[in-house]
Length: 194
Image 1 (tube, rainbow, N blue to C red):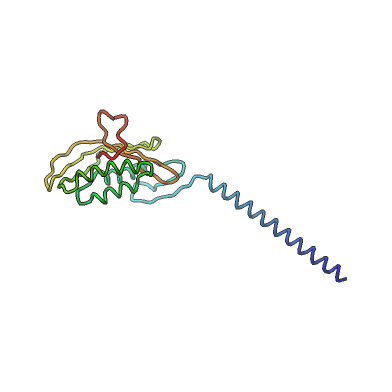
Image 2: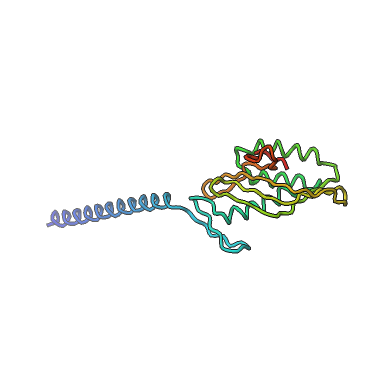
């Protein structure tokens, strides 16, 4: 009698163990499937800045509206500088740069910092138009580059600047920028020659 009760209990425990093992394997399989589905789906983040429409970032590419807004802010940051803000100016540009272009950009920006430190020359840029190409990850900003010495405006010249971007995952980073001239209308410099 004790043997049959013990055998029944052992078989019940074995059935429970087997059921628990099958449930654990099914849950592990479900986790793997969900992970694979999550890893292969395009990721999106919806941004609500002060803009015409809500912006969506997707791992499949950058939208034209987002590239335009980032270009606008980057152009204003890179092209407006004075001797008082040169350190902040350089750090801000390098903070949005790709790791691969960080060295070349820093070299070019250090030349500008060295030239402009201790002077009374400032510059600011007023945007007149912009063209963005999300497929090629480039953008061009045209406007007037104003130079001020002390408190006197010295020049106001029409200029066009080209910005090169890299987009990976959900991160848009600056590869380089430069002034578009007649000599390099097909491809501006990738350094920071502003």
